[in-house]
Structures are given as C-alpha cells and as structure tokens.
Image (tube, rainbow, N blue to C red):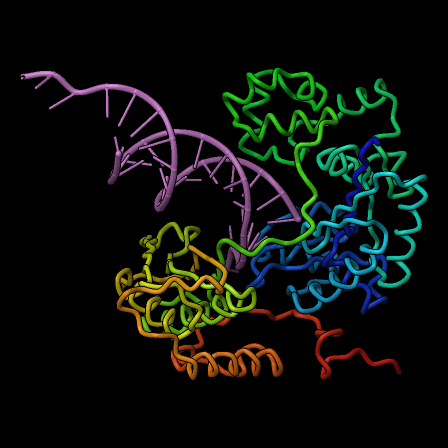
Amino acid sequence: MQPLMALVDCNNFYASCERIFQPKLEGTPIVILSNNDGCIVSRSNEAKALGIPMGAPYHEWKHELQRHRVAVFSSNYALYGDMSRRVMNILSRYAPHQEIYSIDECFLDFTGIANPEAHAATLRADIRKCTGIPVAVGLGATKTLAKLANYCAKKRSPWLNTGICNLSALTPDSLGLLLDSIPVSEIWGVGHRTAPKLEARGIRTLRQLAKADSKGLRKSFGVVMERIIAELNGTPCLELEEVCPDKRQILSSRSFGELISDLPNLEAAIANHVSHGVEKLRHQHSKATLITVFIRTSPFRRRDPQYSAHSTVTLTVPSNDIGVFQKAANQGLQRIYKPGFRYQKAGVILQAIEPELIRQTDLFAEPPDERREQLLKTLDRINRQYGRETLRTATELLGTKWHMRQALRSPRYTTCWEELPWVG
DNA sequence: TCTGGGGTCCTAGGACCC
DNA sequence: TCTGGGGTCCTAGGACCC
C-alpha cells in the first residue's frame, strides 16, 4: 500500500492562542516576543503583511509596532503548552499513529485512508471548532514531502483556500513544475548555511535537487542530504516516531533581565537553572553524570570586554539529587567566574543521562539514602502541586537581578485558577 | 537600555586498545 | 634502527529544527 503521511501545523500558533482569548483582536496584527521580551518569535498574518520579520529584535521595532497599533505580547508558555495538548489530543483521534514533532505540529499516518483530503478537512474543522486554532495540512508519501505540502498549503494557491495540499494527488508533470518553482532553501533540512553551497553548484530549485546525484552530494553534505533527496523522490528514510524518547541532554539557560557582574547573582541564576534542569531530569526518571555550567557576556555589546567560558563537572555516580548538582554547579562556576565583566547569560547542561533504574554504584559511594530520596520526592510533589518554585534552595535567593523581563504577558487563562477568563 | 531557549543528529579527530 | 592498522569510544563543533 502506498504510504501517506500528513503534517498538521498550527498557523501562527502563539499569536492564534492569544487571539482566542481576546476575540476583539480579530483582524488586528499581533506579535509575540521571546523570553525576556528579546525578539519577535510569532506573528499573525496581519503582522507579516506589515513586513515585520521573524526574529527581529523588539527594541528595534518597538516604534514601528506602535505606529501600526500592533498588539504585542510576552510569551506565555503555560498557555501555549496547554493549548498544544488540547490540539494534539484531538488530532490523535484522526490517525492510528501520531508523532508530536513540536509544540505546534505533528505527523499523522494517513496510509490507507480512503479520502485523505476529506479526512483532513474534517480534522481542520474539528480543531477550529474545539480550540479556535486554525491549522494547515500537508499530505505526501514521505515526511519531507508532507512538510513541503504543508508549506504549499500555507503559501501557494490553489491550496491556500482550503489549507490542505496533497502532493501525492499530483501527476509527475505537475509535481515537477511545482518543485521547479520552489527554492532549495525551503526544504526541511536545508538551512541558511547549506542553501548557498547548493546554489554554487547550480542547484537552485527543488526539482534540480531531486534530480541531482545524491551519492556525489553525500560526499560534500553528508548522509542527511542523501536522505533529503530520497525523501523528495518519494522513498521514505525517516520513520514516524510515536513515543517521545527520553532527553539525552537537558539544558536550562536564559539571558538576564539586566547585566550582572557579581558572583552572588550569578550563583542564584545558576542555582535556579540547576533546579529547573534537575526537575526535568527527575520528571523523566533519569539520572545524569555530567553537568556543564556556562556564563557569557553579551556579544551584541561590541565595546564591552567579552568573555565566555564553560566548565564541566563529572560526578562519581549518576544522580538526580538537586543538592549534589547544586554543589557541582557551584564548583564549576567558581572555576570560570572572573570579576570585571558584565554577564548577559548563564545556564547549565545535564549530560550523560541514563534511566534511574540502572544503579551503577561506585566502590566508595555511600549506600542509597532512603530518607534523602523521600525528601526529594516530597519536594517534587509540593512543587508539582503548588507550582514550580514553591520550594527552592537557599542559593536561588541570593539575588534576583537575573529574573527575566516579561512586561506584556497575557493571563494563564487555562492553567491557573486566578487567571481564568471572565464571561460577563 | 533592550538581540530567545531547547533540542537533535552527524562528522572529524584524538585517545586508547589489541 | 625499524615504529601497523583496524576498531571503538568519546568529545567538540557544526548544522539544522521549532
């Protein structure tokens, strides 16, 4: 049976989430800012039409946004995460297999579905009715073609009208014509570094890429390129991944609300990242053996003296004890901290992650401490029930300068009792 | 004044072993 | 004085994604 893959992608997801709870913003341009209100990470169609680019620094565009009366929001991940769960939940009913690829998109296995376009239309209407979120659906024989079809559903007529594009329904000739009209930079897996290199070899369109010598290109671009070409020609190389594998590395990092020079504030920031990272580690029932601490000054402040450093601490045995990691992280920080710099960002990375069931003990390690484990579990439970950061380690309170700016955040309408929307 | 955060995979090169 | 070659593991860095 001919395989058929669907990619469902929410349109302007964050902007759409905000609009649901403020219907008066229908038709108004909306932008969402990154953490720290740094840059623009999501735009409604109206905002895109004003020429506001993705990733633009907010402070450079503030004036222009005001001039056009654009509604501006800080990012509200509690809201987007919850809306995402609702959307994914509904989508899971429309296919036997689902891969949740990101907060706003998923692959569905449509193989064997009699009328895939009608099925996609029902799905779109259902999502719209139950959540208010508009989605586009791309259909193709491989994941890469489904992604491409989704791009067409959002950008190209005639599919723009329905929000559904099925590349498997095209004749080879019309598919060829379509591929010839799309630049290589639009395909999944070719980024801003690779596209110019392909163009330098005369490969400018997807049709040219599909017909290119994939073995030859593999020598220069690696196996990833070979797979892209095969997928573009309808040969699946990428499996649908239904179960989300455990994280192999956990990163927590953030720019500071204001620049920091002193050690106590850095210690507080790092301690907070350690809590956050270890919480994720415990959530997936894993332990880690490596923790890397990093700090850096702002690369955008060219006149400031620049410094960037990282330090990795190896534990003797894998752990998921916050105290152990706080201590290790602090050692790492002491090694790299230099006074006299204005730091802009810090973070920690947990690596060498393994399931907690594997108990690899060191000859000299202490036996497992049941009371300590009970304490940590209680900490998890309290923070889960009453919200993150209800209980914190003392180091986290050494300073607050690192707290991020979030001046324009909307209420957590769906996840916080105090912030439920009022219907009057 | 103000420029995100969190991930994955792949590759090359070094260390080490037999 | 001559000083192999293949395999594995690990790490750092690059590229990409959302």
